Structure formats: C-alpha cells, structure tokens
Image (cartoon, rainbow, N blue to C red; front, side, top):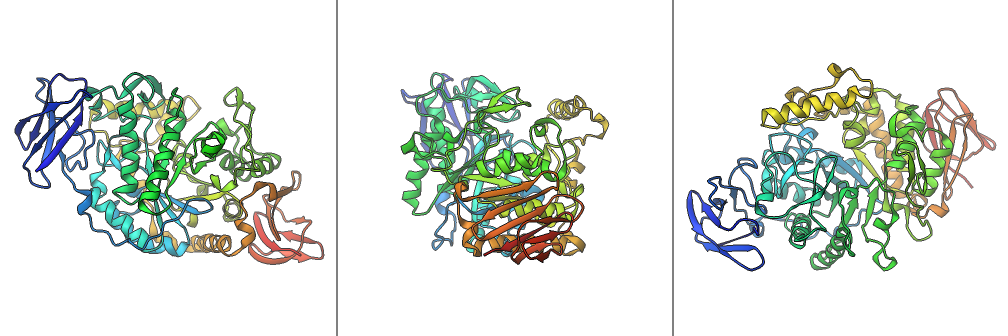
Length: 574
C-alpha cells in the first residue's frame, strides 16, 4: 500500500491518477489531501485539480523519468544501496571545494561518467565536490537554476539512483559532496505549483517571481523549502548545500528562513552523526549570515565572497568594467584579503550607494568565507563564457591560484581551472517551448548588446553547440603547459594541508605588504611568505628565505628575493 499526500489548499477537488486510474482523495483542514492505494513500487502517478483534465506532477515528486511536464514516479529512498557507513564527514571550513556541472564535466554528462573522474579529483587533493543544481528542470540540458521540481533529480544525469551512486563513490574516496540548491525562484517551464497553493509571493527578482516565505499562508511553503534541503542531506547523504542567491529570499518574519534552515540542519547533523554544512551565495556582504546564532546571526556555515574574486582577478588581469570598477589596485587587494569584504559600509560605484558591513575578524574566522579565482557565474555570465586561461599567462594563473590557496579562506576551484582548460563555459539552455527558447536567446543578446557587444557574437544558449563547446576536454590534462599548471595546483593544495601556518583561520594574524608601483604583494602566514610579482618584468621583494614552492625561478639573496615576471614564490623565513 502506497500513501499519497499533497498540499493543495487552492483547488476545491484533488484526485489521484495512478497510471490512468483515478482515485478519490480526502482533504484535511490544513489543505493536505491524502489517500492510500495498492501500487507497484515504481508506479507513475499525478494529480487532477478540480475539473481540469491535465494530470500534474507531484510538487514533492521523487522522480520525473519523462520530464517535468509528465507524471511523477515513486522512488523509495530507504531502498537505495549505500556503502558509506564508515564516512565520518567533515565541515567545509578550511576545505578545498571543487565546483562542477554534471552535464559538461564529462563528454557523457552523467553521474556515472563523473564517477570515472573521481580518482583524479582525489589525487588533485580537493576535499569536496560541489554539484551545480541537479534538481529537475525542463529540457535535456541547462545550468540547472531553472528547476521546478526541487525534490527530484534531473533524469538525463542519471536520476536519483545515479546521484546515490555518485555520492557513495565520492565518500568511498574521502570526498564530501555539496549540492547547489535554488530556493529563490522557480523556472519558467513546468512550474505548476501555483495551481496547488500559494507558493509565489508579491515580490520578484531578476529570475522570476519570488517565493512566498513571509506572506499569508507561507508556513507550508517554508516547510516545502526546508524539507527539500534536508532531503538532499538525509536521503542522498549530501554533506551540505550551496544556497543560491539568498539575497533574493525576501523574508520579513522575525526568524529568517536561513536561520530556521541552519537550526534544522544542525538538528539533522546530530541525527545522522556527521557534520553538515550550509554555504550561502550572497551579494549583501552581511556578516549576519555567518555569525553564530548565539551572537544573533543566522548560523550559516560559510558564504561565497565575490569581493575576494574581484580583488584578485582585477589586480592580475587589469579588467575594470562593470562591477569590477572599484577593484584593481594592490591596495584594494590587500584590504580585501585582510578584512574579508572590500565593501563593508563603503561606497560602491556599481551600486551607487553604500554597501556591506564590516566583518568582526576577532570572532568570525576567515574559513567562513570562500575565496576563488573562478566560478560558474564569473565565467559563464561573461558574454562569451571565456575563462581567464584564454587571456592570461601561465604565471598569472599561478599567481591567482597561490593567492587563493595560500590565503586563510576556504578555497574553491571551478572545474578545469586547475589545468587552465581552454574550453569556455557558456550559458546554455534547452527550453522545449519555442517562444521561451526564442525569448531566452534574444534576451541574452540584447543584454550584452547594451554593454557594447556585437549581438551576433553572443552564443545562442539554445544552440546545442553552445552546450557541446562547454564540455571539458580531458585530453588537455596531459598536454603541454596544462601539465605544469595542474602540478602546481596539486602542490599548492598539498602545501595547504601540510603547513600548519596555512591552517590559521584568523585574519588578525594575516599581514599583507605590497608595492603598487613595482606590482608585488606578499602574504605573511606565520613563518611563510607568499610573494607574488604581478608585473611582466623581474622585481626584487624585501624578503628572503628557503623556497618551498614557486612558479618561475626566484633568486634568493641576503635579505631580498628576485621574482621573474608573472611569478610567485612561497618562502620559509626565520
């Protein structure tokens, strides 16, 4: 006997359709409808609302084998096969995270094909794999941020069973798994939830209508979100979540949904007996997210820090357009590395207002902020989806890596960064509706045309070749200069693990020296000095010591070291 329950306060009548056979359901006062039917364990089912003939998928569908517009399928999480009982888990704080998109990480674009590359990731030395969204969305391929059935796993990747195999294989290799969860909007195709209940709010954001987490009848919507979050960690053994664009969650209640989610995540962590982490993406520069709840914060484990990315990228590359305008100097880089946020109650020219709030570096460790040189956003949201490796020298890429991996921050890589992948990561979609497909393509071109780009040069997200171009070329890993850069990343990650000075999470212990005119900067981490020459010509820096790791051939003299152009050296002093 299978029990079926659905929250649907909007319709006057809800019926269950099981493989074409219709069954009556009983409504409770709280808007939940329920019934029990004798079925096969993998039966297809859906709901009929009022007198409309369309059979709609379950808002909490465990599986969508034929896409988001069709019947759901039962899937029993308790029947999944796991071998990870010995996995102790770990927190993301201080870890090295590897962000990847399942569809482009390998040629086949599935969980099973990604498993074949896990030994490579373990050898690289990373601690976590962060999956871009794997929830169900319309079409065969896309970034995943247009999900509409949050509880189910995108079938072309391998569905729920494929995700189980992937997480189990990661844990077998000592790798944790984070799942990117999008709770700030629904995608434009296949969102039938408003027909069931008040899932949407009066607010909106750049991606669509907002989610009802604070208006009337929002309690069950909040439970829908939190239940989905806990499902990834409970049923699929994920070690945590990356929470997409939490600044778009408009919550005016006394207990913010992020605080509520953090509280329940901590409860689940105690139940499963292993650490569970929440990593927020936020552009607010608001320390409350990562401040502990006993200090009136939300208690989120960590958050992405775009200021670190912007400060490093602009200083190395020289780019200054758009939101990079306030960055670019070594003074800005030094300030950001020392304080976590550059905009901390200071004026942002891009926003044309004050932005952010200072981080209390005496109580909040740097490991609660993620530093990175690339993300899916910082690559894929460029007009052409071009990577830094398509413009910078190997030495410049090495400097960026040294600044991130040698910093006190939790570090994150974006797939292929570690070998300087030449393939782009472009914005791609596969909306099945012709009008939506056309609007997406035209909107993308118009957006960049406003900023001076030739509209004809912008890749069409609906063109299958845009998706194919974005797949990693694994043949590069063992070729040419890619080998050297990959070796450096492995060495930097290993150094980060072996040197106690690099594990110090407190920004008050970090000193940064620099010379704007000569283009050098030095991070002081205990006895270690990470000296970088961002210029193209050799430069003398005022430190000396034993060379622990370097890009280029540094010359150590009495009291000083000569660094070649576009190079760095890690020196042990004293």
